[in-house]
Image (cartoon, rainbow, N blue to C red; front, side, top):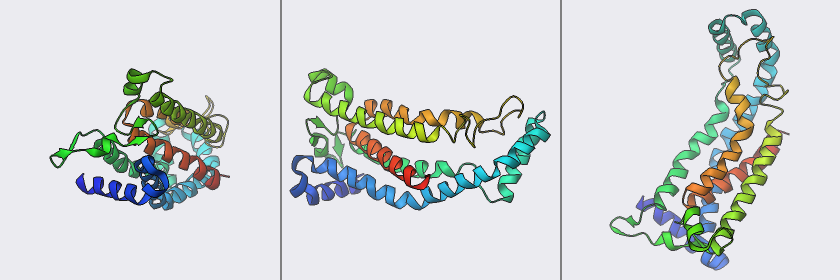
Length: 239
């Protein structure tokens, strides 16, 4: 943890001439961008996997017609098809899973009052009027929804809502709403395992609102930056 704290502090020192009091917040944004750059090859691989799964849809539909009344046999046939075509049904989850350690590092760093037995000075650093170690509940208690810190959160909620709406509109045709990855109809038979998940996926971005409201502002800033990056990346990789 102390090594990570020093990394954030050094980034903030480098950015201070440009961003002043918001240098630590800028360092978190830069750290998020570096993480996303490292994960980008996996995102490209996930996009290729998505296109490959789309190509397999006619064959999966045929398997549903043949094995619609035998769910276990259907699931086995679909998994064998994925293995034969070297397509992983969960490849799209890898970029998000690999980012979790970075998120939890920030969460713990800005949740602990002490680092190596000393005071955690990073907690007092701010994004405008909101301390990076604070939460939305703290902002509400100090100045209300429209107080100085509350306005910072309102701005972040607005960014999350816009990005979530963008992701929803792009994901909806692919994940269960009359698109190429739509869930099975009654005629198709039961889904081969992931139908319910794919139907839920267009709504997942909106759950980020709860994350931003509950975690320390530094971790929330990571989530918002990463989500905005994902929106741009999706627009480029899934034209």
